[in-house]
Length: 157
Ligand SMILES: [Fe+2]
Ligand SMILES: [Fe+2]
Image (cartoon, rainbow, N blue to C red; front, side, top):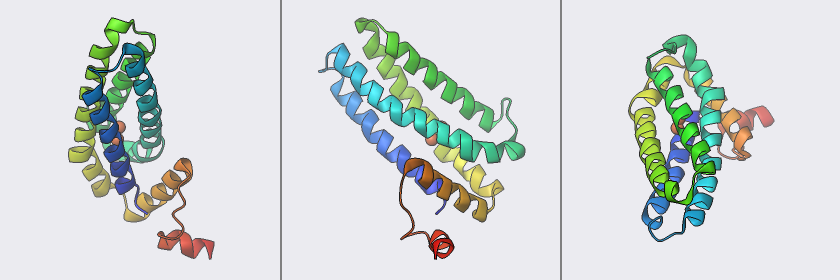
């Protein structure tokens, strides 16, 4: 299967987490918000690592880095990572504003990927390569796609 819809599906689930934290953080104690952010961080960090190791690596020869779209995406990942690191050490009164910033930045970053970067990936990378990256995505996420992936099923058969 193609890696792009897999990554979009991850965005969808992370959006649900962002919405939940945004709605509830006023009622939660700082420690409860910090714990929710720790759970969010495990999803965000693994998502960014998969994007960088699979998709971005293949796109780099086509798009370069610097101030281009790929460079911007990597800079976003670093900024999100920096906020997560600050949240881990934040005082109770710093947690809520940092969580608000994290939610905003993550939504803005996902929007850039959805509206620009994933389209560039479809434009520059062959369908076969996107399918191969999808198989690697499934392996890294421990998702069994054999029953829905014709290419994998053929390979396995
Ligand atoms: Fe990303
Ligand atoms: Fe993403």
